[in-house]
Length: 194
Picture 1 (cartoon, rainbow, N blue to C red):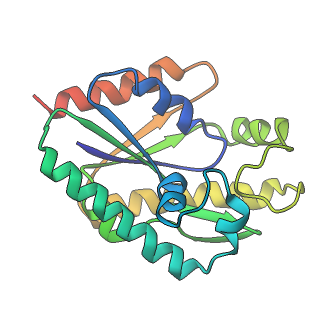
Picture 2: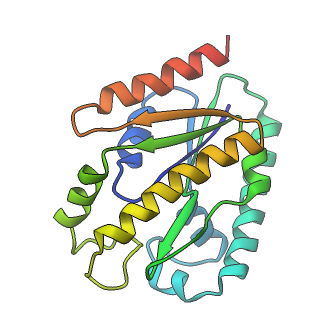
Picture 3: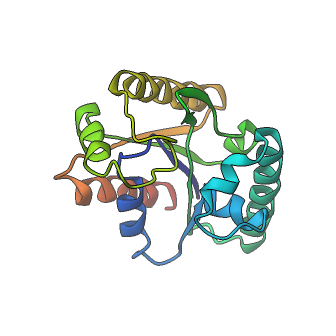
């Protein structure tokens, strides 16, 4: 099954995904890494990635994802868990824009929204303000803008699931609940592959 897993920076998607990778037949596809590889950029070269024109990046990302999806279809392992780690929306220099290709969304089996309390997410980001979260071009941080981004992302994910008639799973990832979040997705997956 193919899962599109997203929400916002700071929610802990990677913590959940890295735990899921301990399970057999689980594969991870991280959006920015896929794009950098396709563009022949070194891993982590967000400065040059940001400098490229958005339409070009979108086209290259779509092409790279279709290559992956074709490979998944050819492997035909119905019990495999394919985790597409990306965003529904992006926030760059205080502007919110669509970050997911809707044709790709239409090829997913389930849209997953990893959520946490807004205050928790803001606290996580403020704790590592010097880490490049691939989001901020300065160390300024506006909680009101980020809260709006969180709300818009949640709404967008739900609308996409409804528009494309996709299964939708919301997973809460509070600081104390990583194991519960992983188990929630694994239980859903097991229920779908019987």
